[in-house]
Image 1: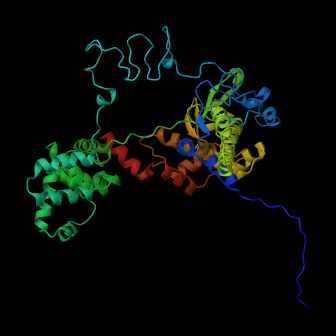
Image 2: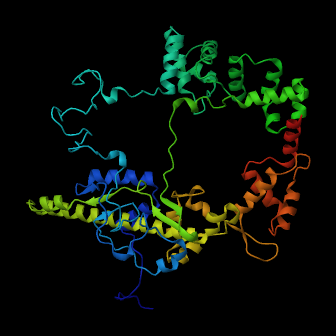
Image 3: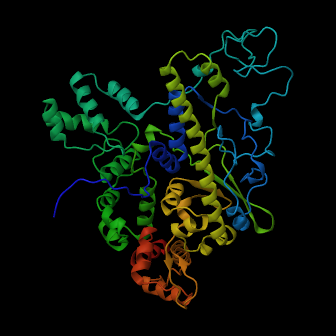
Length: 522
């Protein structure tokens, strides 16, 4: 067989992952916090981008506007929605508020941001008037003098939140005067974990600092009296002991209970009564005291506020059983291309390098606006189809949640499953029944015992919890009994599945529940 070179012409189709396409995919799976951080970085890098002011909306969107803040979208008319084209808004503006329409309210700002008096409003919030120096912050008038010169600025009136490390350092400086002791204490502070426990061996501290182990133990013993109470413990039992000693409640019976926490976790109350030497009422009181203690004193002291969940989609009840759907204006940033600035700098371009830079920035800005627009459209489509298919949940509750998988939504809106997966990850929906992640509505199916419609695993878990909450304390329901009751309701489920769902909801076994309710009855 002879070897020779030749040219072949072939035609094929392939998906090329351009940088723009890769970035669009990332935008789709960003939650609102990640998206906001990304937009902030783009605004810093691209001089042609700017945030849209409140009141700026899409240009002409015609009759294809979706999710108007007043009109909304009827989830039962989704078939009509699927036949429509995508939004035809201008590619110069990406808004997050209901995708905008010609009938949107002219007042998109908050009511408290309006000034009803005469004159104008300056950027710092002061009404325009005689005698006001606009180079100074507006003080609101005040009562400390005519000009308010002696009043402190707003930033000087804010409370300074002290961290746990700062608090412990202050207590360390007051407790010890010896530099050696302070060095040991500072090292122990560095060894604290997130719960406020000392993570590590004290012998390692002694070796690292070249001091006696007795000195390390003495410093630790004194620092265990610092605030918050329970800090610098080496385990849970010691943490509870420190708090009980502070309350003068660490008697021999309580010490025996703290030293046998594993029996308390297993709810072996009979053994605990014998070990502690108390009756049922005293044991119940001791357990109630244990529950009032803080097992993680380090977490409640640093004071990092929990980040609230900002829903991406808002749902409210409409007329005649329909649902009104709109995008949350606070979840997505408003971005537009500054056309006036583009025209201004384009007229002053002097060389090819500047022209190339401006063209690249303009293309990037236009692409970002289109990508944000498409992202909002996709989220709205997916959320609308979820509401249509889970209408029973929104109307009647979790017991009517039906089985749903990504393929069902993807086929209904003609998208790929991976796209639906990215949209539902980290996105939340505010409904009359609460705030739920979009992934919450996707549950596996449990077959019906009579061959009818399948049941959602989430609704089955809810039913198991309802049965256990309503059980008779004298007739605790075992997993086998739960299977029997569920099968009578038409749910074909195995015992191991019931046990798995029960453990996932952190519900004790029937033996542990019997012990606990027996102890409560005493």
